[in-house]
Length: 429
Image (cartoon, helix red, strand yellow):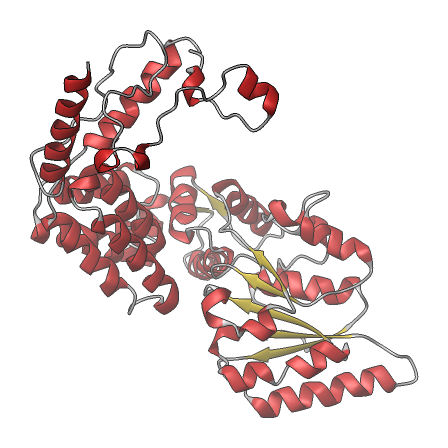
């Protein structure tokens, strides 16, 4: 390397062994799937699926080192079939050379390759010419051809946790790459990184250059805000402002105000919130605040989350916005939410009541002889498909009345149905 050549901080801190990897212990810890793959001595094709900056490229490089393999990188954003042909030629040369060597072909952003480009890898993966490793930020179930997917294990990488990111800051300081950082400034940097190691390291490098120029011995929160500007100021994920804003969104949806709901949704996106987090919250709102008043709401929330996984940002955000408006204008009911909580509370404090004999399963002759299932009335054989007067609660347990449908949306009809069934039960008493 030429004297004076700048080496990015991310490269200087890139792990040289598995033990140096920060995060992903669910895959790389002792006895975990990827660790076992490293220790097996036999590389296998795989897809590394996870958000940006979580170590996909690093893991692929370490795998090549572990197996003493030639490492060939292809960017699906910039590359094409020509790059694949060149990789095949290099793999054949390594295999047939004086000192035969394995090859690992790493394809970054593999979801950007079209079907024919992905298919070009298949014969060489099947023949064992090279081991294929694909990295993607998108759901491989949608973005990777089924033929290629069936020949590769899928490993799901997670965003780095807060402590993982703090460890990265410590490592950067340990090599003298950044000055001392005030606790409040470190908290803000970790929140801003949002699980992305590359974002954190690039930000630290920017700060180090600025701090050196101003001859600062310490990075303070106030200076950090001045240098990095408004986006850093507004982004407070994990802090009070973040939770206040998501609370405002939830309460606006519950209050059936589509404009306010869209406003807080846009504020969350503008502040840097992960759209996947917002999608999860919308699914929760559909179950908690709309429930059976409009069961379609839950399905629409799930569909919006799936659309976002397919399209990503910014295109997929429109589907989430559509869901926000639908949930806001849908009829509201928390009847199931309340009923479930009441049922959990009752079971927690109540004893373990035995299952009534007529409700018990009787798969053996002995059980039938012991009257398991005796007297059970099969509802489908009864008038209207309802066994009027039959009891399904434990003996001696009073009717708890957990579920009380509201007078809104579909629950109006559900309430009418339950009253009708109750009347039929009362006739049998």
